[in-house]
Image (cartoon, helix red, strand yellow):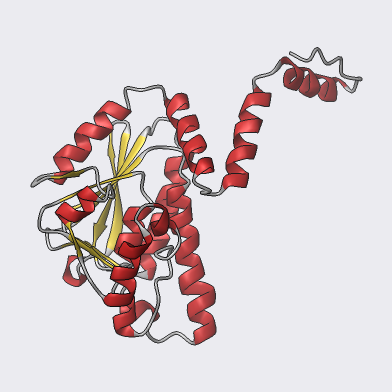
Length: 255
């Protein structure tokens, strides 16, 4: 049965797409599993980084399984399928820990949007990127016309979405969308993540927050998160909490 498996590798969490008969197309069950796993990862301080992989070599993910949305009424399609998927992909993009997608094969439609929600991507030489939604009468719905534009030039996104062109691995590297093109992309990803988990987790988390704020990835939440982190380390915060518990007037030092 198709699913997304959670595999723990010491400090690294691997999320493995397993729907090879449909080129790892995303089902409702897989989206629900992704949401659950992301919540677990965010709350587990012992997990320092995340790798997203997929079964087989033909495809990383070719988007959303048409059987999951083809029968939906317009309001259901927009309100549930698109918005729910968008919410889950946003959760991945805003995860506090480094994320890396291993594109062992093609990343089309929702699969490309899933990869775009990660911090880095490595790709196999035979893999390609595409936004084929117009070919089945729909539009990108999980950030393909939004977040992807922060990672690729506008003409490239238009080339895929409006003209149906595929972007090959070497061109994706030249455009900076992927970090490496390798025959064994998972080994490259593992080396990158092994290095990442040796760094200061708090420094990595805050650096990611600042980069995202600069790129308008949930900027308001990032600004308030950074502010909250700074004030939480202050003497005034400790005094305020103590005074509340003691039912007395606080004596703030400004430190």
